[in-house]
Image 1 (tube, rainbow, N blue to C red):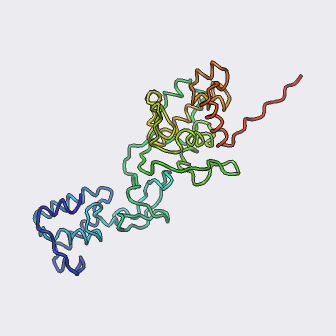
Image 2: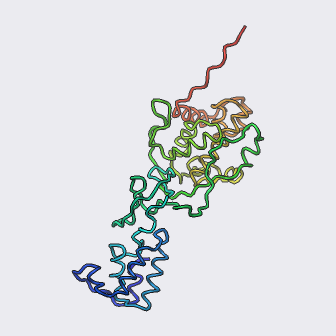
Length: 321
């Protein structure tokens, strides 16, 4: 809610050289009001704005801007509180690379760009915070325990698992030049690195393959849409996404879904190149040709993915004659 929408209710406040504190003067009631507003929940700024509006109906309306300035350090109602009420709590947030992190809020401040929290030494914009101190969030993280692949049928693997969903409100497009470092591990600054590792561990799929698929499929663009309407970072067709219970626009859901699919194809073909080809051309096509289908797109796709990942098929055992 912006100041202008409130100011229409009353004459505009004149500009003075005095500070917000001086403007409030000795008015004890208004001082208490400011103190109260500073400790409103910063993750629910509309509640704070509504509280201010309701209070303004029975107090000095011409001091609305002065009150807002005292609360936020600027005349705006987007984030009214001084966020002191959540310092010392544990926060779940999304970092600049799209990874979900957890840490303790050590301090907070209001800047011209909005509220900033310091979490484990890093400054985090409050709009990147998903939850704090046990707040209920509609989330279903990638399980830490490896899936019982041996005890699952192909159908159960693809459609019978609980869908993964982790709320995400971070950047939607990334420039990724390298997926794997010289030592064969995922590069440290890879977007969604923790999700690739978690999904890979869950389904027994190398995270290097999953991340390389994301680079080949969408270039790490969460909003990518192909001419065939394949969507998201891992380019799920809507029919496949619905069948598997995947949200293509959600990175955790899409990455876990891709890992599930590759695991199912590895169980069927026992060959990484064929599993990757199946992701592009379909399992039926790989079965038909008993290998990578002779499609230019699929052949190029498999070459890209395995190349980005630095993948080499394990050497086969020598034949004893």
